[in-house]
Structures are given as C-alpha cells and as structure tokens.
Length: 327
Image (cartoon, rainbow, N blue to C red; front, side):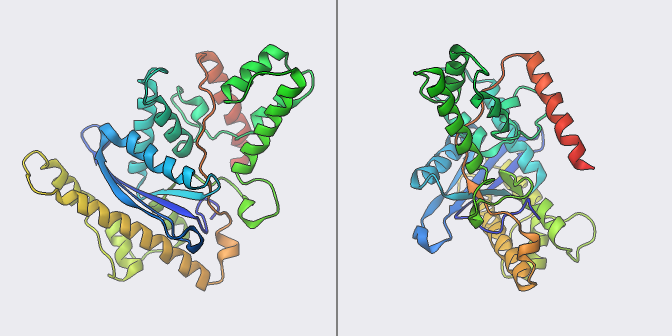
C-alpha cells in the first residue's frame, strides 16, 4: 500500500500509554535506530518520559536525526490509532497553549512539522491533508503580489526577506521546489517517487490490516499480531497490563515495570515491520504493494492562519479538492 513505506534510513518507534481517564499521554517510550550499513548503524538510546516532557524529548530525537543528515529518509511508527490520536492531540494542545515567545515554541513547531498532517490549519477542529507546496505556486508568478506582500511571505517561510520583487519571487520559487522535493514528488531516482499519501506517522495496526490477513477473530492487539507473525520469537505485554503497571507508579519504588514493557513493545513493532517487508518480498509483490519509500523529515511547518474565517475557508477549499478523489 502507498501508506506503508518499503524502506527508510531511520526508524522512530513511539509507544504511548494512553491515560483512559482523559485519552491523553500518560507515559511514552521512543526507540530510534538507523538500520542501513552506510549510516554506520547509529543507534540512539531509548527515551522514556511522561506527558510533561514528551515534546522536548521527541524534538531532541528528531533534531539529532536531522543534524546527522537532512536527507535521511525517516519514518515514525506507532501501533494503535488511539496512540496516534493522543500524540497529535498533545501536540496541538501544546501549540495552542504556548506563547510565540516561549522557549519551547521551537520544539513544538519541529514536532508539528514532522509528525502532524495539516499543521497550517492547526486551529480548526479538523485536520485535513495539506497539498504540500502546491499552494505556494501563485507566489512565484510575475506581478502576482507586490514587494511588501512578497517580503511577508518570505519572512513567514523563514527566508531572507530583503531584495527586489524578482529576487523575492525567485527565492520563494526555490523554496517551493525544495518543499516538493522533500515530499518526494519529483525526480527519476527511486527514493524520490511518490504515489498517494505516505503518512508522517504510520499506524501499524491499520497498515497490517490492509496488508495481510491474520488468523485472529475479532479485535487484534500488538501481542496477538506478534504471536501470529513472529511465531512466538518475540513477545510483549498487553495494553491493559502496561496501563495497570503505570497506574501503580506512585506506590512503586523500584524501576517501573512499564518502562521495560514499552521497550519490548517497540522491539516487537520493529520486528513486525521487518517481517511484513520480508513476506511481501518473498511473495514478489514489493513493486505492486509497497509503492513509496520514507521521506526526509519536514522540520518546518506552514504559518498558522490567525483568521478564523480564513481557516474555515481554507478547510472548505481543501475538502472540495480532496472529496472527488475518494470516489
């Protein structure tokens, strides 16, 4: 499927304990690895924390990957839709409750750009897909905007806003080209092709259900998936057990059991991703099923629209553009 990558240079696995009282992040563990030999198998230590330091620690991991190489193809994985929802909701809430002058604002914007779809419409109740780069096309057309407007656009895109109108338009056009290349939509090289929409965060449960039929009736969780695909070679605890151990955190003085449980959970996700690719490759279906490769991190984000009416108009426009594609 176009929503599951055939390969990446760096993989980030995030397991979240969802606090069922309010569906927020209770605790998390991040495991990051570079599996390819040409990257010298750099491995970052596992990072564990609570909701209070989620943004800081995730931003630290993403920043180290980007500093290693801005071209590193990176894919972020989590297992369940509820974990993904908790992550996105946490980042949106952090952005809406943080002032522009706050020192955490840079970390929040980094996480939003790398993990969330539709961040230009952050303050709407819905998060539709953004046609990355496409909406900047009009900026590069001659006589489309005066110098003052072009300078504002450059400033919001993080570009140098000094120069003549022609210089500013050229600068915006180059930035537009860069955004398109980040999205993997140009060029003849295999890693630059793209079909459909590859999510910034891959939800494994959803992708496994699309790719393979498991001999499990009813609801399927990660331990059951690992048992079916890995044949008992690797196991992890269920969500209920992990949540129960986390709920006892105030009464336990030794090293929390849930930390090791989340570590095992991330190891299971990594093994399942490798197993899925191997099964598809052995069946000779890689070219027909896994159409996309992971893309480099998008460490920036579009400017947040400050007008409620314009945000609603942008949302309605994108729904109008995307809706016909679903038929």
